[in-house]
Amino acid sequence: MKLIVGLGNPGKVYARNRHNIGFRCLNHYARLHSIRFDRKQCRARVGMGEVGGERVLLARPMTFVNLSGTTVACLVRKHDIHLSDLLIVYDDLDLPLGKIRLRQSGGSGGHRGMNSLISALGSEDFPRVRVGIEHPQMERQSVGEDAIVSHVLGGFSSQEEKLIEPAVVTVSEVIDCFLTNGIEAAMNKFN
Image (tube, rainbow, N blue to C red; front, side, top):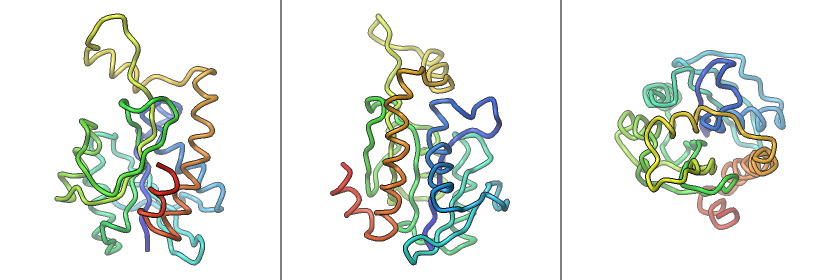
C-alpha cells in the first residue's frame, strides 16, 4: 500500500490558505478517483482506494501543519508503510507560485511541518512534492516572521488562482505517476 499525505490546517477558516495546498491537492485527487475521506485514523481524515492496481491510503492530518509528524508516523506504523511508499504534498515558500518540485529525500528546507515529519519518522528519506506558494513580496530586504505567517495563512488572489489551479491538477498526475512508476520516474517527468 502507498500512503499519500497532504499537509494543511484543519477547519474551514484555513481551507483556501496557501499553507493548505497539500489538502487542496489531495482533495482534488480523491475526487478524480472517487476516494472519500470517510474514516478517522491517527488524528487524520483518511480514504482508501485502488488506483492503477495499487492500493492507496490518502490522509489529511487533523493536527496543524507544524505538528503533523506524529500523525504521519502513526499511519506509517499502523499500515506498515515503507518510507519509499510514502508521498508528502506540501507548500513551499521558496518556489515560484504554482511551480512543482519532487524530491526523493532531503531536509525540511525550514518548513516546520516537514521538520515535524522528519523528527517523528526519524528519517529524511521519503518522497515529497513541493508546491510553490512564493515568498511574500516586500520592499525591504528581509521579511519578518509575522509577514511570512500572514502570507502562508492568507488566501490566493484571483490572479494567483490562475497559476495554482493547473498546479493542483498536475499534482494529481504526479501522484498517479508515483503510484504506477515510482518517485524517480515522476521526478524525471515532472521536475
